[in-house]
Amino acid sequence: MQRIVHTNHGEPAEVLRLEALSDAGPLMSGTALVRVSAIPVHPGDLLGVSASPAFGAPPRIPAGGRMPGVEGVGVVEALAADIGQSTRIQVGTRVAFFALNGAWSTRVVAPVQLLITVPDEVSDEVAAQMLVNTLTARLAMRAGHNALPEDKREDVTVIQTAANSAVGKLLTQLLIEVGVHPILLVGSDASAEALRAARPNLPVIVTEHPGWKDKVRDALANRSVYVAFDGVGGALLPDVADFLASGGTIISYGSLGGAVTDIRSIAPRALTIKGVSLFSWQYEPATVRSADLAKALELARNFPNLFPVAQRYQAGEYLRALEHTGRRGKTGMVLLAF
Image (cartoon, rainbow, N blue to C red; front, top):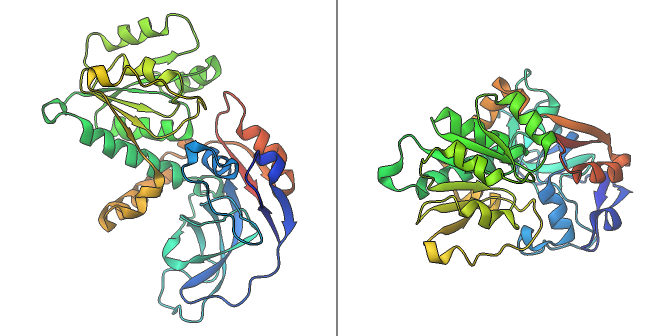
């Protein structure tokens, strides 16, 4: 068995290493041993390795090292003795898992309640990445809905940055399903081309081109915007804030821009920046969490194109996977296979 681990915080390519992993010991009560088929390399995983402020408090590194990763897909190989035959999870069941601390391994031990049965029609490539990004998009959408003035919740127009990112594409799908009109912002022509092919009826605007703000104004056609969804941060956030009506809200769910944001223009117009963190999802009501997981499975079944794969690497190629994850204009998720 193998795992990818780090014993210090720092640049992922410098501190992560592949090492042998001893066989798992006896399973604790209520747990399952899962042989991992594939895991996604999320930008957030790498932020945790580097202890970036965008991750939050630096994750603790236990004795023996820390494995990144919180989700993936695999097959159950063993169950704790106290798990009966009547449970939905059995040896041989293909499962997705979230939220697990340390998924970058040949095998993981997970509480059974964190395992989700994967239907036959959902591929490993989709199942490996269907939870984190969908749940983040659902959290962002709920935050955006709650931020709208009560008398402005019909015929809603919003602005989305990072619209060709994994979360961005899922968020667009969720917004369209409830009748919201998104204006999609991307950072490169390559991203714009991919997004226009997928969403030919929506305005897609490249923010690296001069005059992009004029194109946003044309697309708005004097409609008021009370919510913007931002996955970039940095210098783009105050530019997007310029389009919000007084009292509007920016829902921040990421910082792909990797730069410090100037917020001096926020207070004079009574704008709000509301952060959305996947770490808060576990505190949502049980009925909401169940609905979110059901939605993730629904999207995985019906819209597998929302979960594209940029490339799948073997665990021994993890350095190539890290480089690919950071490429500008990348479309799709980088996966690691064990």
